[in-house]
Length: 252
Picture (tube, rainbow, N blue to C red):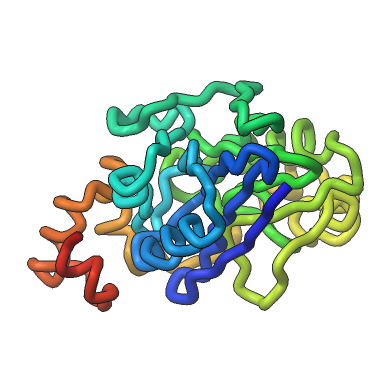
């Protein structure tokens, strides 16, 4: 098995590259527009055959690199069917299994942060997107968010997995790269120690979080899988407010 954890600093986003070393078939999880060149270079250097581009949800804080990576590889894009977008090649349902060489990726529906959140289980590793974070959880105040649904997703699905499962979220803002199911059941201040649903909902209701800075451009871009023509139009209109690498801004 091959595993890489990659980081995009502007949005504190983790992108993950996983593969079956025997067949060299690979998948990338939550790629970011700004780091597409880095990701494609790594895939090429390792001699991998990218089969899937997996999205844990429709992101509000960064633009996906899915469309650009898809153009440059044989990979198919995959997102929850509940996202209700037309650009994805595979619309995932709860429990669906994707074959990756001789290994398997299991999609687990974990709504709450958004209605279309998916976590992915692969070889003892759980990629939780924004559903379960390290000592935290995703917010539930927009994109059909629901504290009640998120509580059920974490306690009834994720926390029922083996304690030694390694947890890899889509973000971390404190310099920690991973956790385990056991640690989050014990130490997560929002939902650990068998916290009640009522207490969790109260905590989430009282959060006072700023709107993601890129939400106004990330959501429309991600609803078309980060289609390069749409993103480049935003760049030309100076709607993004930050710079991309020259190759991305100028096209391929």
